[in-house]
Length: 517
Image (cartoon, rainbow, N blue to C red; front, side, top):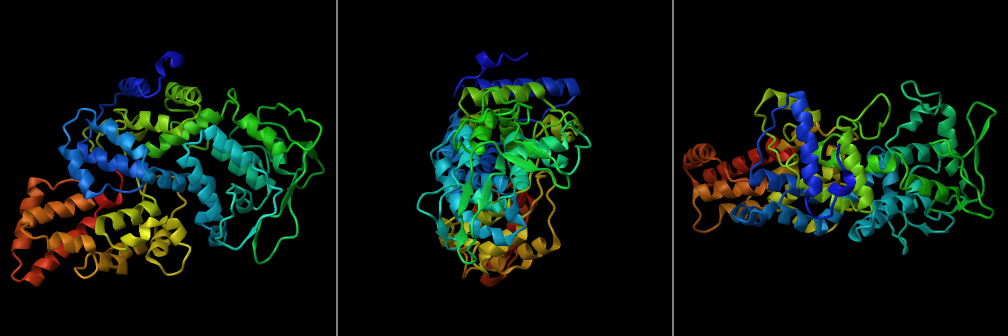
């Protein structure tokens, strides 16, 4: 049994070691033969994608591969966690986690800029996650704030979270229970849960915490946040019945309602983030783990139930305890996970037992988000690089831009990163789309032009440069030999340029470029 109190220490790597020990014990029990450690290039690309949302620049690849320090991986992780790219990427991740509705409802995107800016400010300040959750759950709503679509208010708040959920208690109950408790309680909205112990009455007792919110005189032009919330004991009627139910926590305890106008959501926020809450720390730790392995220890991540047990219960307990002990510092937990040998295994399968992904015998191959695909294309090609100084999601609000086209094309509401599936339209866009045509053009692409026209470089040098800027690794000897022969066969300078363009195109369309591995 893991002694969590003695094992968890900040920035010592002891948590990483305990992660590895518990995973190793499970692998031995299940007969899993683990894959070897990843190469430096493989690790660099993976962790940079996971922490900043895009592949590393060529200069960083060359520097890291040349670094002989035994601690260079740990040092890289620290640099990435301190970078602006971490803030932008995790803002995107948590925006999609908290507001999944925006992927399928274009009308809701006008609500996003302020919420996204608020999230970014919290990640910049490394706000403890329990405090971030409390702020969302209990943010004051009775503030008149009218803005035009896309315009930010002066004081950033997460009020848009409630507008996107349409102020409906049932939507807010379903969203907050999934995001912060890992519970799909909405399955009991219309009837008792068919596979778990949740009852319909429990769903509406939880939803009642949001029953006192109302919107007054909606404005048809402005994005209106004219919201009002009354205090005191809230009640809600269960649809299609005559039953009124009081707000009660999911553990069956009824709040002690104070005199005055204390918002019910404040009571709920305190219960959810309390040290003894049975769900919050585990759900958060499980969610963070899933970001790096494509699946949770409890999987799906928002389905904590008696019928869906954890694959590694001791590991989940350890991570949850560490998160509480470190005052919900997400960077601490992320640092320990990516410094573990479990995370640093190669994704190449070396034994058939490694195909059982729930035992982490090798690093699973994962799909990329729409933002990551676009950011990788910009990083690799230099095309439209000037637009990336602003978050691609905000840019996507405008019509007919490469950013908006890419985001809409590759956006998915699937939670399964381990089974990425490209559509025919996605494949055609990458193979024949305007973006790809321009990105591999001598006239349009900065990177392509710089590599092809770099003075004094050999064919092998150019081949290596194309591999470094796309796949973040040098080519193998066999790849250099084959490609050297292909490019050398060109009879004219124009044919040679076309051959380089074909190489660049092939690398950008390869699964190695389009997946995290």
